[in-house]
Amino acid sequence: MLADIVDLLACPVCGSSVEIDDRIVLCQLGHSFDIARQGYVSLSTGAASKISGDTAEMIASRADFLDDGHFDAIGDAVARAIEDTRGPAPVRILEIGAGTGHYVARALDEVPDAQAIGIDVSKAAARRIARAHDRLGSVVADAWKRLPILDGSITHTLSIFSPRNADEIRRVTSSDGAFIVVTPTPRHLIELIEPLGMVSVDEDKTRRLGDSMAGRFDRIARTPVEYPMTLDADAIRAVVAMGPSARHIDDRQLTERVAAIEAPATVTASVVVSTYRPRLAITSS
Image (cartoon, rainbow, N blue to C red; front, side, top):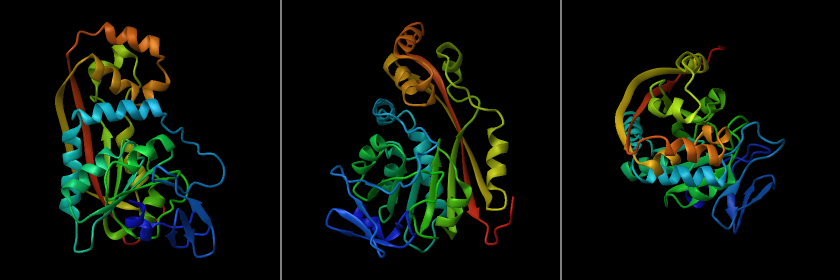
């Protein structure tokens, strides 16, 4: 809940610390932000985001797919990475682009003393995050702008299939903390990409991830996670509708293409879970 993580938040206008006063998040200089009745707060200011937030339909499809357990092995690997890098300080987790809050909630289940913040630019996502776990606070914010988080207040920052603003993530992550990134490999969902016309994984993704981390973080672990999933027609439809491919395939096309696939189908899940430590001395990249 927001009350449990408000001491980690910063005013998006002036950067000062905030507190909760009734149904308002209020900073020391008087900037105020209403808490929505669903339990999240929007700390997004200024011009519209360059990120197109997920729609309510995309979030619902993601919830259906993840709740059925298809990506549980990925969530387990993330939770292990947190456990492997925790120190004596209380665990404070930030997930960027948290979507439904599924992964960060799973991490909280594995780390009983932890608190967490889920940030997403989508209000539909924020509503889901707010009810995903009782130790999880939900915030609407733009990952490509200054994060509404105090300097060095986070022990573990997560980016799971989501954008990475390395400078901001380095700023909010404590010097002895960790940054955990999940990226798909070119084999991820490979059996569905061509027949369904899905957006494929850029084969240069690994190099670009390394470039974005250079001078800010050092990689300390790399864990491939690959396994077969058995997906029925509803799951196949959901895995398309929950991601970027949903913006390129209309509902009629998706229905026709899914019907042409013999289901249940064996589909590959293939990602890499990378763990980074912040560099103590930041150099320009």
